[in-house]
Length: 260
Image (spheres, rainbow, N blue to C red):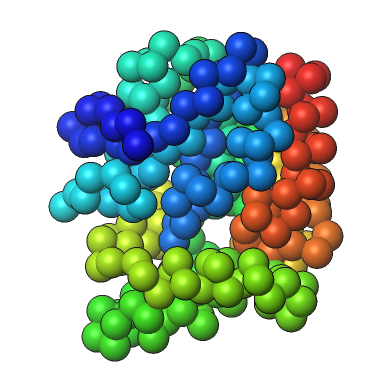
């Protein structure tokens, strides 16, 4: 696994080295870069696809401080260090928070952005998430797996996608305590909706019809605010669109790339 030192941390990443435009995939809280395996398989044949683990998660270096602005800085530094820009930047949930900050603040780095199951608002369920974090600190991370799975997946996945659910439940149960710092950064993040006014980066905003964390209305707010954005709601999926409905997501993303 290659690593790179950027922005005061060490990030673990994979790079397909494909011939086409660069695509950077930024994962959700509680996951790692492997959540995008279906997208790497689809786009890695014709694009240079880079996936990476956020600081404090996956195989990247642990950190004593994490917030969304720092994660956006990490992504910008990665794009620059690998000479990727301008890129198509795709982010699911936490990765979407990063994508929106880059689109608003460093649009020169982006060819386009795809924001999956994310929000430009402050956390609307902060009290509930803080209570979950406190329970995780006292009872232990494995005891929170059911709650995390409910947040991260839609009803269809929870009911019918047994193998997929089992794979990620094992992943959630094996997380170390550094995930709590990242989760708190999500809960305490500031809104960036106002920064998107006049943003002209082409945005594809995808939401899951069964999202237990962020309702599709939050995605629509992004599309209504940015100057060049489209919102699509995907059926049969919750908060983890990239893994729950990969074929649908890949088709929508491919059309977006072709148009930009």
